Length: 507
Length: 98
Image (cartoon, rainbow over all chains, first blue to last red; front, side, top):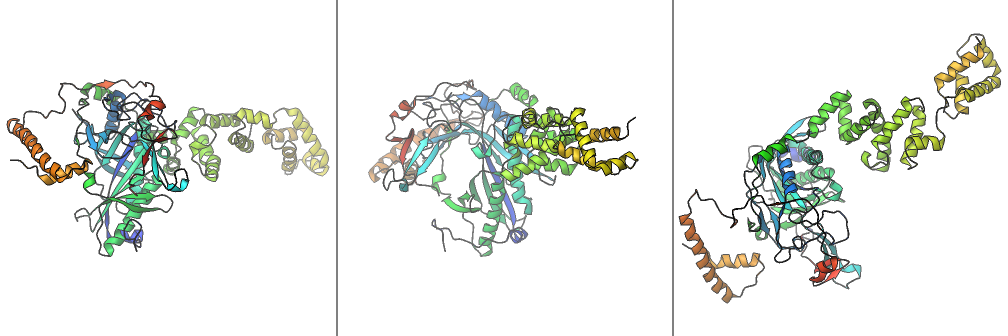
């Protein structure tokens, strides 16, 4: 049986069996769209989701005679990335034309870098979920430009009967990209899918820390291509690899690697050989399918870009950029864990929930680290899970959580009321203070209403009142309970107790 | 000394999407051979201490400030498009990769 594109379908080998019998080797190419204001080679603005073809220039449209000029800020960002990945920065490097025909590349070539990347020979330590560290060698990081966006429209739309066509928006064409390429990664064994995911996640965190990109996976700011091959043992030569394109979420990276390991193992088990090809990841089915077979069409006929002068970053400039690098996420996490006094397991939960920045902001807003963790990892984590969104996507800000905790600390609300305030904030009723006032949730601290409620409770339960008067303090709880009920939980139980005792045993 | 064959010319033409007749291939293979040979003779003069030239002017680090300029108006952008729809370029169905 074969698929529509002629690739034999295979019964997957169980993942554990596959990694027991084969040694996986992988490599990842990550593209990140830089967050510059303008494009790589022209002053068109960088936008996301604007009206089509409203952020273009003769350069990004590839019009004849248009001349590109390098965006200096993009070069600086590329150097920042290279330095953060422990790379050497080229003394001099050039752009090159990568020639191919596809309508989203209007010039018929992509301006990229070939044998002279701006950054090369680096490494990155990747921390796994259990705290283990895996070092990934970086081959290079080079500058290039993004392509336009195609929308493929089938004949079934009815607009053009029976015709199939594509619509192209060049707003994205020319947005600066940096492509980070690893060396073949060996030795990860059965943890290969996890290392692959953690690597992309670590890179994403670094891009954000460096402030070179919003690095939003769901917007395609960061895109990963995953190369994978199997070999019999770690001493065997590298096997034939496949390249799975555009794996665009952390989870998908892990799943795609896992799938390819099981798929390739099945082919090898059956005595077959792996075809060197591009494969496509399908999020819905969790599978990859064959795309293009690597062939003649991959001869991109690279040659130096004659329209652009070489880039030769001044050493003083490079050192200035190095000195200004922010603290890297891993170091920052270690420092914050110390500052916050979190146990390893607590910190890992926070990291795995992508809550480090959120908790840091909440602490900055005045909450204690323990309180910040309590809210975000407790009530709010549950809410996020119910809504199937990230913590950061909840409609409550760290500042508001800080404010909420401040209200608790000031004794204006208790924990139970705080949860109701939280509910109100999440429902869009305003900030904590507003919700508290609007819902009338404030703890009753005025003794007047409390005394009235106490008197009513004592009168309603004369036998209990009598017991307390005779010195048996056991049943005080039931009076307090009645008062709390009357005040809908808005009383401070400690204060109620004091008042009850004052009431029944007048000095 | 030439290594440029007729087959190579045919291959490069195919990569560049240039449709050549057999007669054109014969003619171009001959003409290109002359050019390639002429360039090859330069290699015999250029020694290892002569850096490769990719740019005719002694320029480095020509950078632009990251300051936006207005886009071309959509009407102008699409003026040269053989077909357009919804503000986008309309092209025939692309031989899809998947």
